[in-house]
Length: 359
Image 1 (cartoon, rainbow, N blue to C red):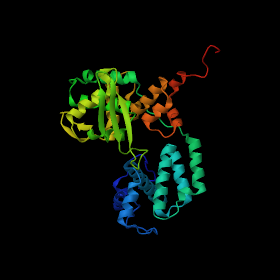
Image 2: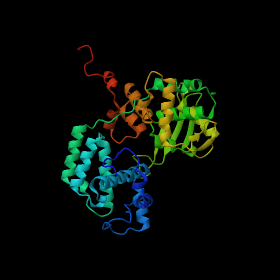
Image 3: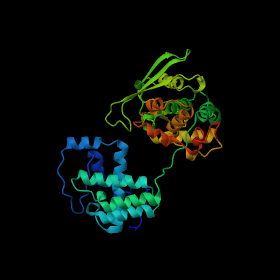
Image 4: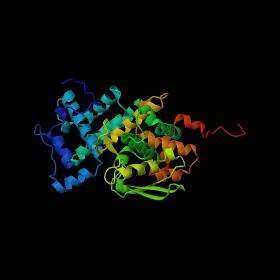
């Protein structure tokens, strides 16, 4: 095996054996039969399943991959089992991240996964040793902590996309894919939804009220669980009718509910118009980038993602001087200070410190 591994690659089959399948099934670290076994307390199936449910599925998958990559690194560079790694090995693993140009956020995720696996097995994690934590702090200083932010999709751009998508795609306005994409973009923006929450919506989660002709009322969405609500307390989001009928998220979504009376609101559609099951969260980014590329030809579509809908909502409403607590109610952020993370350099001129007659 090569002495260098690409930690950005998916784990290959050599890193993804029976023990990883067991981890997926039970939510606990499960070892292969080779090598010495760690001293662990036997956990019965019922609590093991509950432990697995303590993480969101995406987090559990990410942790599985992180542990598999660490195990592969240990095998390739140390010729030892990951369970036998100590703080010196972990510190070298931190240095490997820096030398490979990987981000501090990626390092933090990998260390969190390693800690979880060790501690669930009833063993102290070497990732918590001061040598490792200080090395990680040094990595943050060396690499910086700034993260790449998705370009926000502003309201004017969103309206240009939904009004032009049928024309540039050479499809009729009532084409199933056009109807789906129009509703998905408009609703994702107006409800400031994460991609995972957006595709999880069922027709039964929506309720319409008021009169669209008068413009009062709108649509009430019920979220059963989201990234920041793993205990399923649920949340409700109100989306009002827009004065612009052609780009109204409520009217566009209503058309889909007339077509799908029950089940997933957003579904896969192939190029022949055949409708399949629930749309994946990853597909939302593909849809956003495709329509940005088709309509907003002066910008780089690679700068946009599914998060551009949520970021665009916050950016637009902050520019329109909407009260922060109203934005927070829609985005469901727990801390108002988080909204400032959606500011982009260009927005600094919207409300500059050096302004007014005195300047």
